Image (cartoon, rainbow, N blue to C red; front, side):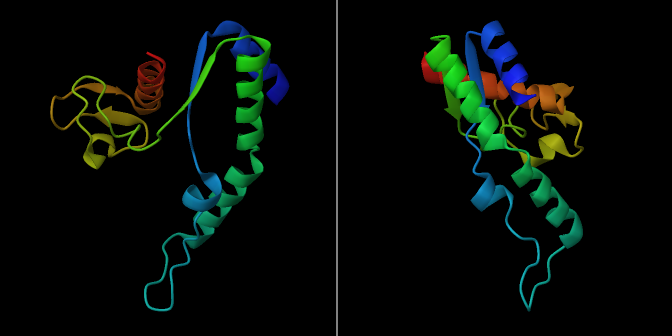
Amino acid sequence: MYHKISTTLTKEFELIAVEDLKLKNQMTKSAKGNEIVHGKKVKQKSGLNRSLLSASFYQFVAMLQYKQTMLNDKLFVKVNPAYTSQECRKCKHKDKNNRLKQEKFKCVKCGFEIQADIGASLTILDRGLEKVA
């Protein structure tokens, strides 16, 4: 399945930009806490960690990168993932309150609204374009 998806993407796009995520040491930290401060939603976080680590994210990104750059001689960039879901596309204001709900983004500074995942993906693309410019 990953081969088909990565082949389709690399044939269709001249530039592919992805977040340079560090799953193993940042996104999958334990939620257990310590003896003094106990963690929150430990079971949910454990399930999410299991899903993230089993999703073969690194393998898929490696496929994309290889096919995009080596087979198709096209552009592939990894961008800093910091605040991609909290940064306003219109005014570039970053605030955790811009995304209070999972699916909705509304800038607290300029009022710009967009579906949150689409906004974040466009921010990733913008950063990728800046990198190759």
